[in-house]
Image 1 (cartoon, rainbow, N blue to C red):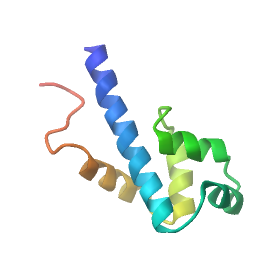
Image 2: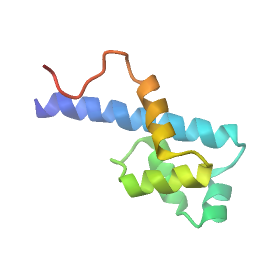
Image 3: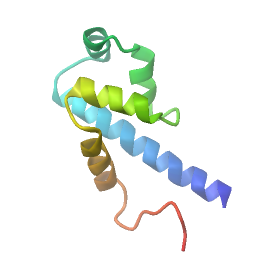
Image 4: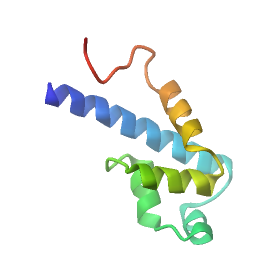
Length: 91
């Protein structure tokens, strides 16, 4: 079960990465500019946009504030990126 959950978690991380990067590009901002404007580490933004690490909620909240979107909007968009029948728990 752990292995299956790991793959599902990776799908979520990749969806988060896509949504964050799409929003940043929509606003025509580079990682460098976003990091500079809001005093956020470039490496944090890059890791989140590459879906490399499991994101912490505080990191997501910070990036969302910098992008001018509520965290709830990020979650809504991530849910739309995932398959309709996506679930972490197999029932």
